[in-house]
Image (cartoon, rainbow, N blue to C red):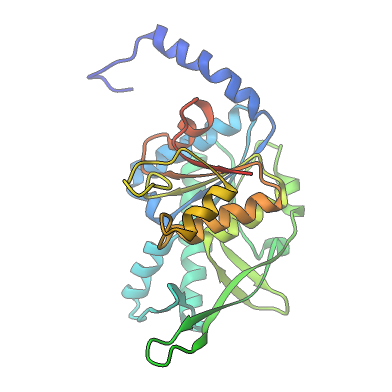
Length: 298
């Protein structure tokens, strides 16, 4: 609590009382939270996020954290002298890059997040998609239009995959037992090997397989913006597709919204895109009437 602007005990009590119906709404439900590399920011923000996740678990919600790590991977690649290459907006993951990706995602970032949650009083377990064959991925292919010939060409992204099968056995064993799974988006290949998977896509597949009440995609923007850069609070799937078609939703927001739609198709009740750098964004979204981002729903 801030010492310069203290909140009275009466106000604190009222805030808690007003949150009760929202807590009841998510009682015993699964909430998957994708914590993006860009949203992680400074250590104090990451620790604040960890405390919020522990609070969810303490209020009988079953949180599942999926984390990214793009900026951290870039920093490590630079540190070890590996030049990153891109195509169709995605990093080309060769064998050397994959080694770094797995080390950073399933290693340092995953265990750092586990540590923050444990320090906040939770009991986190760090896993990746390879554990228990939780996520088996297939090779992802993308096509681009060659600017010179105007011919569509297939881009080989290397060891980049997309979820093909999700086995929730490990998560079913963990959830409901005061444990918080923290997942790195590294997946197994069907015939051995490893795939690097986009964290949004990974989180969407996990949320769909678990039939989560909510999937929260924390990023570094407020949510989906209209053409005047104002936040759109709610979108139906039809609205979202229309805004993609007319160019309102563009650039990197398109794959995020498409992930939301796919998660809804798999059985997730609602998906929210919100700014993870806003203090207590997760709590604002789940426990207040106004929410904190853009809710996409069927």
